[in-house]
Image 1 (cartoon, rainbow, N blue to C red):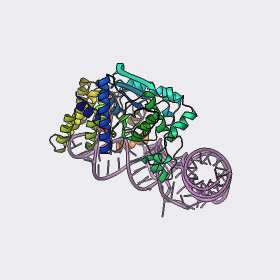
Image 2 (spheres, rainbow, N blue to C red; image 1 turned 90 degrees about the vertical axis):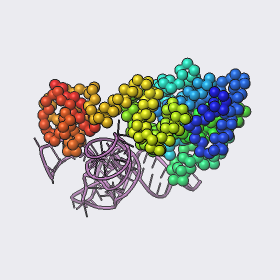
Image 3 (cartoon, protein in one colour; image 1 turned 180 degrees about the vertical axis):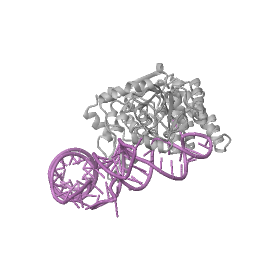
Image 4 (tube, rainbow, N blue to C red; image 1 turned 180 degrees about the horizontal axis):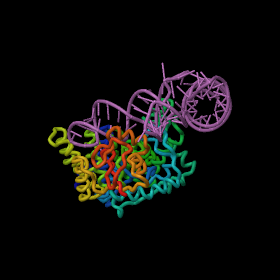
Length: 404
RNA sequence: GGACGGUUACCCAAGCGGACAAAGGGGACUGACUGUAAAUCAGUUGGCACAGGCCUUCGUUGGUUCGAAUCCAACACCGUCCA
């Protein structure tokens, strides 16, 4: 790849919300790449991750994929785990104050976090760092100096603080530290490039660049990526909102979850979490828009690609077959969990005891709604006695085999 | 330190003495339909009870009342403003 190609490759998927800023960053990136080539010095590229949860979902992988691209071009990638910033909790992506995390929790999460990240990143070429390493050493004096670079007004113009201010909701003092700490990370890491989502715009473009300049360094270049919506297609993917697609799951589940996104979210997924080329993505979007491919088939292709990217092609194919059999043909799956009832297998009791249903009242309701099937036939009598072995189904996709 | 406001089911939020197991949204679940677990429409969404009855739930603990999510008191937690 020549420099121009590299720049467009690396800028792919970015979202600055302002063409001028995009232009400026692309130019800075080009310069920095040229410099790197000239002196044979790889760029130092970093992205920070909040170890609030140990469960990564595919939304987290958007930035990792970008890091991977830098890796492929021979640059040095630093994977930072925000063990210290997690003590505050990033106020960026929420309108509410985030709860604080203890050092111990953060450390525990961090380990499995890095492990999962290596499904995307090249383990050999990735430097993992914890920001407690340097942030815990900052003195109050340092903090005062750092803070003197910012005005309260700068913080208050940030949308999420602004909103809370306007709504007369609390904006805590310590929340202001977050951006400063993240900026200090960039300085300590001597970062050339920092990758992050649009919610990191202020932290990367304002805080980090200011602090680096203050310390006499060249400010880092921000690669700001779009935010992946959750399976609801509306808001940012997040575990707490329950609209996430976890990494630690089965290929079948991942495939199914991708299939559940609304049609309008397909383009975003194609752009942010596939390995497809720009040309392929654009072709895909065009075909969907013009109705050249059936939206269902388009989504199937998308699901297969995404599943393949996190597992492998073969597993993705199997997940696809599984999906077709179970949901399109309505077949019962092969491996159904078994359950052996204690006493007499009365339907109502079995449903609750096996954990298929939470309470007897709920079981009754489901039966009334024709939601419970025995060997494919809707059950009407909650008190009927089953004759094992028999397959009991709740809804479309919960099965259990009753054995004696 | 002072003045106000808040705490309701999974989440947001109404209710401000009886018709409250508690409006409305969201979410979740079921059914119909479909192109899938999308969209749309309908229904369900505290527990127990082989029926319309009982039990538990509106921050906590007491109190007033035939009767309290609703009134009073104390306490706890949260927030805003003034110092």
